[in-house]
Image (cartoon, rainbow, N blue to C red; front, side):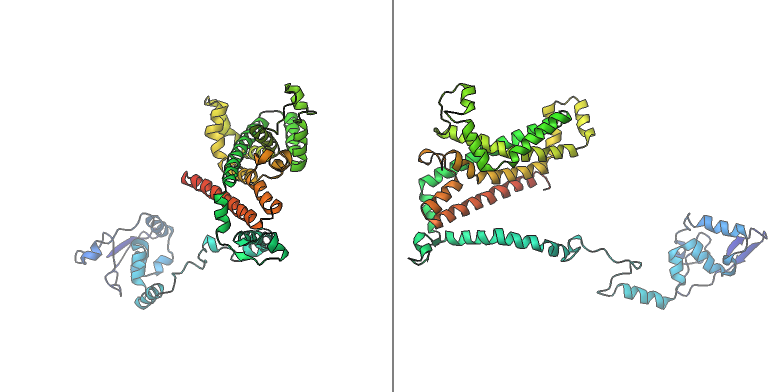
Length: 409
């Protein structure tokens, strides 16, 4: 029995709910004592539904007055469970069966399910990248393939001229290189020289990038123009200018330093130092400009907060700026390793082909001498393959160490 008060007439209406076709209808606290236990344990009407019911009855006759009391009570008090109980049992069974059918997804309200991020765009990005990939394949992949192929053959001037047939040597050229003591000395000198150039380039470039953020506009412009001038100078031109500056007879550096006729290119370490100065001079602008752009992208509030906390400039760089610039530093470090490891022009021009008795040889110059001065093209190709593998190994190890530290590249 359900009692309801009409707000307009003031009368109290009562109605008895007929039994539901799908079973006993759940009801609230007014269930009869003889009702089943499941009916008595049904949840009471939700508080969100009660205000709407009272508002309707207080406003006067509405559609709920024309609806049977059982349906009104089921929709207002029992919520979705009662609504499902008054629905057609055959329709309910058909809907459940359709939703659980294998290969069918439940309805999503007319909206498409979102696609996986990796499949977005399909082949469209590859179509746009196809011209660049074709150029890279022609300029990089095919030469590397030829380099590796020649390194496994016996390919000298006799084979080039057609006087002797080309024969397959397998790893014979690589065994010859590893047994050569000069190759091992040149390899060690190349690694040490490249490491010194990379560290000096990064140190100078980062220091000048920080300096650019401290000076005024006019000094900043002058420093940027001077750095870009060094960056735009061809390697052979810069090498010739540096040789003249340190010339023992006419160079201004020896006169200023009162070194007399000291020859910078005579000794091994002095010659390597001179080449290092030139390599750093033409390489630091790239690091400086790139790091300066990264520093300007850091919010000023972060640096200001570190300064207010009493941190020194070195501590700010080490604990705040450098960690935020880690992706940029990764790029400039890898680029510097590649450029400095395969340096050729500076060594060849400034030390006249590798110094006295080859004391200033690096791998690139050594490969050139083997391939073109001695006509041993297969040995020169093998040296090139060794350089490529070393650069790949160093780059992959560096990136792996960064990923272990949780950095995203």
